Image (spheres, rainbow, N blue to C red):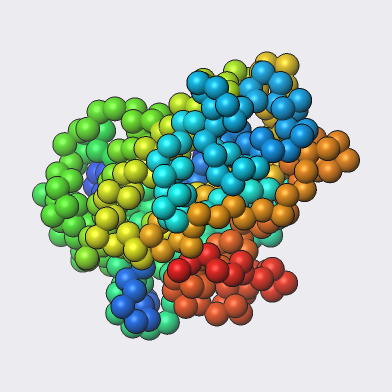
Length: 415
């Protein structure tokens, strides 16, 4: 649900069509303005995965140790015993059985889970919730730029990270990556697309009359070359979309191939769809289990594809809000508030549940219906990027996440 087409606002319809014709690999920004050299020997990678539709955190990471959990989850509650038992984490929190890769990463110290988390948004509109999540602003409609792009633009001069831009995965780049800093785009090559020869002819044609468009097309050519060097030759791959297990895995594989390249982008964002489980959500098996299995497969694809740089990698998984604590009449859950966020990667100080647990008693629920949020995903993101990229608190509070001076970064998330 991409609703602020920041990059396209500068384009006439004809320019939009030309960039679309350039294919699944494209550039949405122009001349890089910043570069950055990571401190010491670290060469960090940071990937943000947005789960669009609102993940049910109480099913993904069930608090089976909470005495009020089972009654609220009538029909979909997970159990700690039996043939479809949830996977143990810390004895209070468990993991959905569809996520064995995440359970292994957690045991290995490469995954941390933040529960009862949310942005500062407290309504229940997907559109507005995703706007707040991806823009990094205190409310919807404040800006058409994303916090990852502003992060890139805030890095100090140097070599490396900012020069290579931020990768936005999808036919339209997610809002979280849009802005003035350079943006590269990639989409899984399921559909027919124009080859690099057409892109070069377009660059020649427009090079004399539209410098911005020519620069964008030239960057598309360079990104196409990077993909070819990584074995992504552009042949249609088939399979499902970003709301299927196969599609999630393929998208993660492609993103990892580009982010893992020595000359590729160090920062990326992508979105998986379909998490709006109003009806027939399922418990250990069913619709949500299939989606969680796809996300778990994506974790494995990131781990494999980024293996040479895994020790410096953080993958952050977020969603716009959670779902109701109680099950509705169609054995699903409605729009809620608190949910979970995941941190995965070799740079994560993992093996930890991070939660100030509010409980599930009626008086403890937000507006008597939702898991009450006690952690802010912006504080989590601040903590990660402060340690990965060395950004200061004032930069994070004023540029990356404006108006969050009182929201301190979560400490100790990165090793």
